[in-house]
Image (cartoon, rainbow, N blue to C red):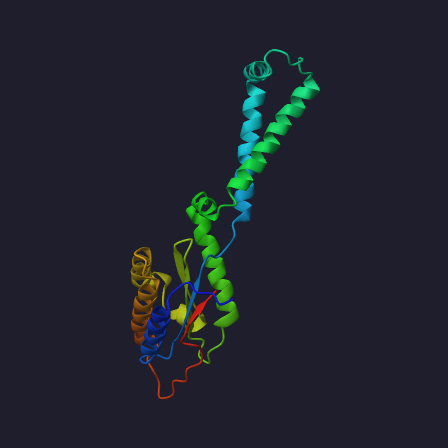
Length: 226
């Protein structure tokens, strides 16, 4: 099944922006857009475990209250619980809480909302680096490839540059390109955001890696969707 996060017009817009940017530089720009960078299953596991532990701790700290609640629920006809039965009840409450939270967190938007921003940024960065290593790193003669990666559900983006570019251009130099991209993505215009980021990346690359007499197109200009 074909993946489609943006329109054909956005594809054309980004492809044209890459081609135009590369007219003035020996750098090669690769653009990738993905729905998300990670499933964050481990985050759901941590939340479920924390909530379950808190539930069991609260019940254990206030046994009289919960035992009284048990007798009210049973109408006073329930037999008095032994220590082992009470322990089993506490564990059962924890298990039910864990399962309940896990099921709720199957809903991805909530799982993402509960994921700390630092973790989101780290996962997006890790995914960008993985994609860079596979499709961009050392794929150009002068080690002048650069990847622009957008992860939609995390509302994050990243730029990863090959050796020659990283040696000359500090990461913060790409700040304007990233700001323009994120601003337009938040407005629901991912294609325009990526195109504007590519344009600004091209200006930086042209300053440090101007186009030579030979300028082969070593990497694809088209927007890649994952």
